[in-house]
Amino acid sequence: MNEVILSASRRTDIPAFFHEWFFNRIGEGFVFVRNPMNASQVRKITLSPDLVDCIVFWTKNPTAMIPLLDKLEGYHYYFQFTLTPYGQEIETHLPDKAKIIDTFKRLADRIGAYRVVWRYDPIFINTKYTVSYHVENFGMIADALRGYTEKVIISFIDMYSKTERNMSGQKLEPITLETKHKITKQFADAAPMMIETCAEKFQYGTASAKCIDDNLISRIIGCPLDIKKDKSQRLECGCVASVDIGAYNTCLNGCLYCYANHSHSVVLENMRVHDKSSPLLVGEWSGMETFTELEAKSNKCIQGELWG
Image (tube, rainbow, N blue to C red; front, side, top):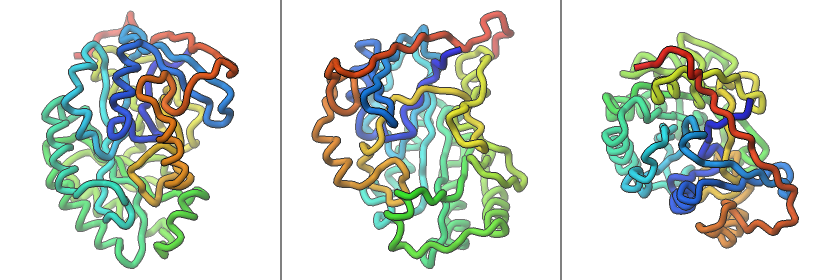
């Protein structure tokens, strides 16, 4: 079975920086995606609303996209919205957090609180961002988002090579299992919404998250799904299978902890070859690539009981 859930995108912030390109792709009804491990391989994905069960947007600032959501009429979608208390020395190009909270609220008012999932991710510890700092600020954000989301997903920093290099000046402290338990318990006590952990080996009174969530998608589309876990993700990841339409080394948020960017200079180089009218997010289709087309097949259980 081929996946027709779109991830837009774990690799970059499409709502913040590429919404014009995305809506052009929706208008033309297809997108080309390069294999991130082999740029000479390109796959075509049809974007018909009849074949796309759901779109999952990942973002830290969808401000510019909200007025354009009417263009998604006929599509089902929800947002994974990351909102943390880090300053601009960590998240270098994000606006003031009060503005982001306001954007979160406006988005929830527009599409419904259950379709905007709050991400407090990743959690790291140093002399500034201490355990007490996280607990206090998580509580303040959670209180501000009361009624505007039904769920928060948390996770602790993973030290990928890119992350380790970019965060080398932040003097991170090791996060022990005991510390993870402490933070998770205090977050759960403060959260006026469901709390889940993303791709974590430990559990402490919380459920494991499915960021690409078949249960939420079933609720949104009013139909059960028959779909399996995404085998391309980590063992602890609960996400179901999806197709990501983004590209690495393209996000301009400038977060030091990002695993998807090699460096800001590489991002700027890629942005110079971004064309919002191209079927590819970065660069042009040369015709020399190995080309395949996704054979779309819906995951909907058509004979199943409809969900209200």
